[in-house]
Length: 430
Image (tube, rainbow, N blue to C red; front, side):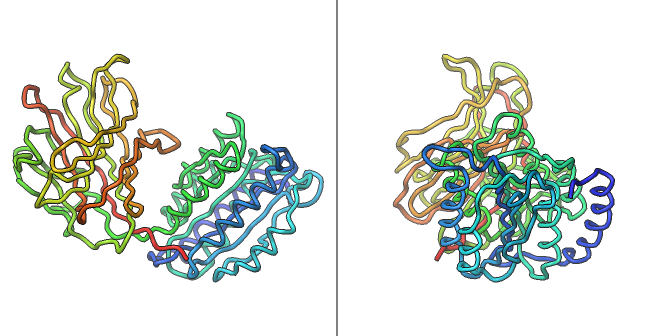
């Protein structure tokens, strides 16, 4: 089917309102519901290293399936797997249901790159329909693995945008671009952004495996806590230490904090937010959405805001992921830092220069715990991908999540706006 825009528009007008009725009462379960979309079009026959993209994708996807939790519900959709540029070549090869590794393995084994087209809009639309009609509570996501852009007159970015708005984010779209060029990446990354998910680029087999692992971790998350700061007070689960009303206010769905001097280890730093909500049994992710004023004066390089994991009874032991302005040989830039302290001693840090100071800047911070390894990421507003800041190992006692702001006492305060704080448990794999 070569999707004319009028047909896509009519389908969208019918599909999204109907799915809203199905998804309106959905809640998060402990395991995900997902549909994987695999590109089997002719371009997947191109070489990626010593093998074709199709072989690389099949091998990486097969490994992923073995690592999914047994209670995941999974479907497999393919397109471009037959015909000569046939826009109707789309098929739900394995209907969404309880994870059937054997059926998925059999389906994937028989796939070979053909001369098919790339009907991204149609594939997304049919996958959304299948997920939306699947009456099971839990997070719902689509994972698209493609090496090209739409070739069947559809507009997948527009579809993803309207889907997200119409379904209020009930279905997320994640995209892996497999050996794509800049133009193809723009469209694929825009689909992921419009679909409320993430885009991952993979230039080779190792990159594809890493991208699938990152998506797997994302999809096997169980949300424990979200604070969007839209109530009259802090949500139970966040506690203020060393509270100072002159430096904080809740306003318009944001927690406004003024940077203040103080010493965390000495117990004098004000308005530290500590997490006391539901705990993860093992691994977890912390995510913070924040904006900081880097607009005024030379003091802009003496302020910071960050996520930390620390021992409240012994704050000299901590891991900190933070944003700060700092002038170095490459100019006055705001940078992300990832540091470890042991008994108050700085054990070293990694950093990632992000951009020039001189404007208010919004970004996300993510701190991941995986066993004894901790990894820090940053994502400036408008960026397609997360950038790793660094990793540290910590073998001490249990660490408590916290949020802090700070300034050098010799410099004036600046405003920090915190929009969202989230804690997710990473469910164990098989």
